[in-house]
Length: 479
Image (tube, rainbow, N blue to C red; front, side, top):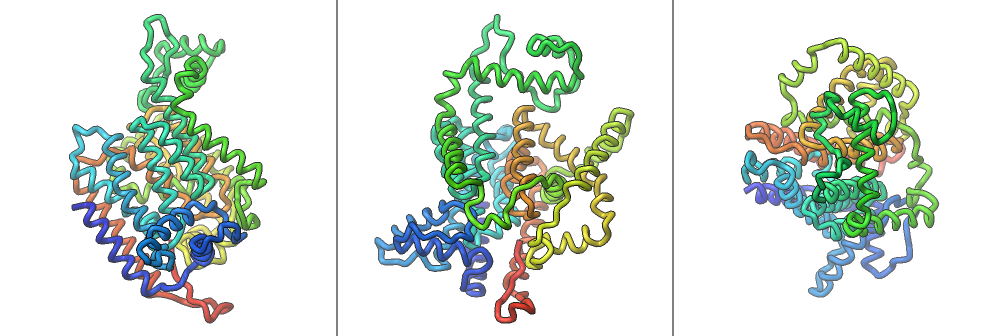
């Protein structure tokens, strides 16, 4: 039933979009002509405005070739857009399998899993781009497929799929590295531990890292340091044990990560050949240090995850202050304020392009007064703590740490606040949250996502506008 709803929504929305927007729009003006050149057999001409590799065009080219066998042209605007419909259908099945694998099956019925997967498939930011010819649906599909294959222990194939994901977006290499680390963790965890071996992988759940016990003494054995805080001791012990065990059992680990290494080495070769990570139009995609992206993301995550993660119990627990929490809050606030002051960046596109949600959020919230960006610090802190504690309940320390590193490497270098960059981080977070036993939470999330989708599509299709400097060009509101 959930799958039927998903396909029905995809087909119904696409039938609305295609007649109203028959010509390429926004980035489609670069993607569609490039794909059509591939369909015509021209693989050497490249539009310098394109910043991502040609994975999407190659997939469409294969589909078009199959169509040509039946004398059907599958390289039209509508047919190319349909490529992403196929990715979205595939993503639904990936999400169902991934959620089932990661969650406790004894507490999650197939209906709950299917409905939860449907909600994630309808995540408004990602769902919108199924109806235009963008790289996001394919990128998301292959990244999460790679993770699914990792959790299914099909490591060789997972690395190959990870390599394919790099042909859709270069920054997916960060997720490929994270998944390789998870392969290493799973491989080391499966090695039988000898009684005399006291140096096995130490990878507790985050929620258990509270008291030192004998951990400090064990940790001193590794690093020969005399003093360490209990938390730091356990954190460092996890990292150290991962490195030492990987080296000790490298010949066992290597066969499982060989295709991941091929993907990473191939990416390194691309960097050398290309002279940088951006394929074209580098002037508007200069990497930098944009730390407030993390604060924007945690706020975004809190809003879209709230139907499943928000609870009064968690808020009440957070508000129960003590000396330790107060000190942590003060230090966190000082660091956040410093990062906001030093690293807030307003990309020219953010200030000039009124076709996106981010333009209005920035204009009506952040630009209302110069103090707003600082006054939001408590909200960032509360959001971050709640999100971290939720994720920590369902993941080990090393996976959580890897996720945080992936967030930093994915978001901080990007100068532009764009919600598309949050799609994979959001879905990776959500697949680790088991489907709730209260079906009402998922129904609420579905309703919220559907309303946002309907509003966005309505504005996109039925509220076009023009710019004074381009009176003959129709502009449309979108994510």
